[in-house]
Picture (cartoon, rainbow, N blue to C red):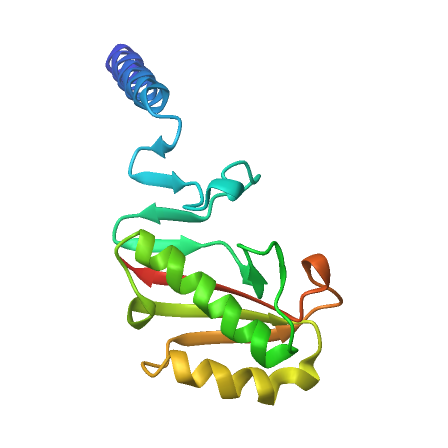
Length: 159
């Protein structure tokens, strides 16, 4: 019985070792791809070297990094407060989704971070214009956002 158990253990270790070796070989062929997960850099040339992926794709889902109300062509936050920043953040999301053959109507989950919870009503008045399908959403306020932004939104979308 001990011999059979030992042989089974050795066989199992060999199988696990071979699988790990194959996975490592696959990872080396494409630094951007890990099995069925693809890490996408930004579609914008000036954002190619950010320390995060613009989108991560797995199965039939896209996980987007948070977007703020920054006009990437001008390199600064849009003027006009929470409504203008909300619109720009969503337009930025729309552009990333389009790059990956998806769209706002395929968004299934939004996470919204406000710098000030008192901006909720104004943010929401813009948000509802873009998301008539009503994806699941979490909204909360934080003590501060990158570059003094008033809002950051990330989404998960179906491909």
